Amino acid sequence: MTDVADAERLIAARIPTTGTTIRDLDDAVGAVLRQAIRAERDQPPFDRVTMDGIAIDFSDWENGIREFEVAGTQAAGDAALDFHGAGRCIEIMTGAMLPAGANCIIPVERTSRSNDSIRVDGDAVVEKLQFIHPRGSDRLAGSELLAPGIRLGPPEVAVLASAGCAEIEVSPLPRVAVISTGDELVDVDEPIADHQIRSSNDRAIEASLKQHRVATVTRSRLRDERDVMLSAIRELHEQNDVLILSGGVSMGQYDFVPSVLEELGVELVFHRIEQRPGRPMWFGMSSDDKAVFALPGNPVSTMVCLQRYVLPALKQMLGLESDVAEIVRLSADVEFTADLAYFLPVVVTWTDDGNGIAEPRPTNTSGDFVSLAGTDGFVELPRGTDLYTAGTPARLFRW
Image 1: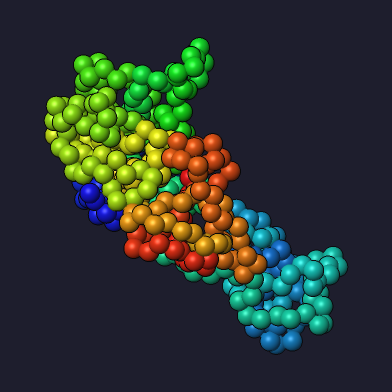
Image 2: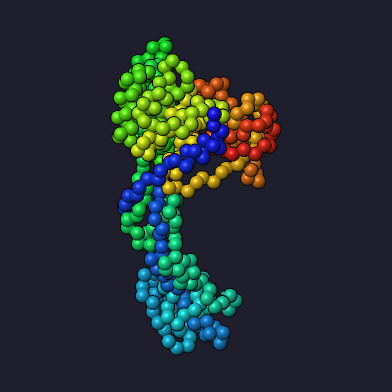
């Protein structure tokens, strides 16, 4: 069997990166950037005024002038005015370009106007270059504003707009087929018999992939009939970039998935991981470089394996930067005697000083998916000990 860290490494070493596509800026939110974005101009592109008031030459203030003749008014978006001669000023608005010859802004609140002159309060604090955002002080023209591998949100879209990027290069979402196997499964709106259960794994997987914006998804449900399974999986493999199966990967009489995948030419990378839940997980790569994840059918196992292995792989495909590990501490002692890594559902609270505290919420069995409702995710407790004491740090994987 494979250790957790080895499984993670084996997947990462084989996952290909998607190609790129061009998307309009209007449709960019949520996409993963695949090009470096550089400043079109200096930022700000001119000496920018940051306060309504008057623009003056600071040497006038140093020479004792406190009343200024108004030489003009300049709003944001106007070309810079110019003024010559001592004792003159320009009425100026926030966001405007600094007038030629000016090097100081005095706030309007510290002034009073009489006809065509403005007097500054005697106790006003006035300094050279005050309330001026210097040209290029944020970024210089040609400097990198955004690096490839980031998810585009509102701040990034604003940066793209400022750089004049009407179209951008991003990752296309991979097409993922989610396949549930099992004769016992019926859909949410179908009649159900006493010996059947409603199919929930496929919908949970789809919900997670949509929530994390890592794929376009189709769902299929297959009976435990080897020939039917072989034909359907072959077709889904041809039509999609990734397959995620749920169920049929253990060693039971009707667990056909491993042998079907082998017959389809999918090369096994590993089968079974030293963990609980989710030990029977299967991973392989097809001859045309498509990833195939076969997850255990028990719902808790499915969700744990999806979050721990499949989502990071899909993010890698998109070229997305790796998630920063989030570390929390157990709120209580946890006993676990099996020599396996333990994935424990938790609810996270926060102390006043900002530390995350993970309250254990163990499920009744790996089939007890109802207990996952209301949890924040699970922590990974590494193998090698039987007791994890309160305060033990652990990595959190959020749903």
